[in-house]
Image (cartoon, rainbow, N blue to C red; front, top):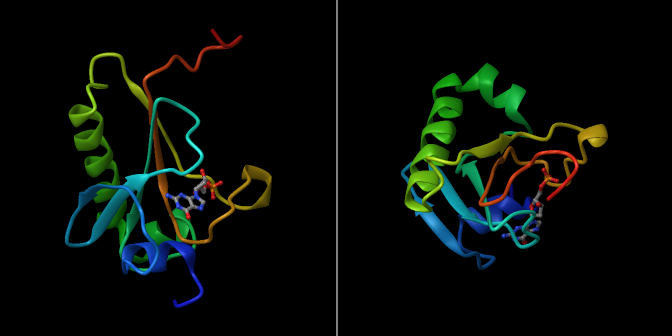
Length: 114
Ligand code: DGP
């Protein structure tokens, strides 16, 4: 999809800070990081959200999670842990309609913060 931001990032038409490049997936740093490590992992193929991806290509959901775990290990997050998030739809504030798995780590997500 030529008008999709993440399709254009995957195609290299818009620059991104690459973290991992697989045959079917691509991982890059979020431009508005919410944590010391904030990486987005996407399928190269366009699907609007996690449910659509799961219905069409369930093995790719597993691949996104495996990629996230590999990136987490590379970033030294395995022992302390990390958060994985798929935002879906307006109430979840999904702003890019190309499914993306957020990998967040390097801080505690306990409440209250700190
Ligand atoms: P979501 O709200 O779940 O749709 O998350 C979209 C994320 O994408 C958000 O955290 C900011 C990030 N983002 C938006 N535009 C760009 C961009 O051009 N480059 C990169 N690297 N990240 C972007």
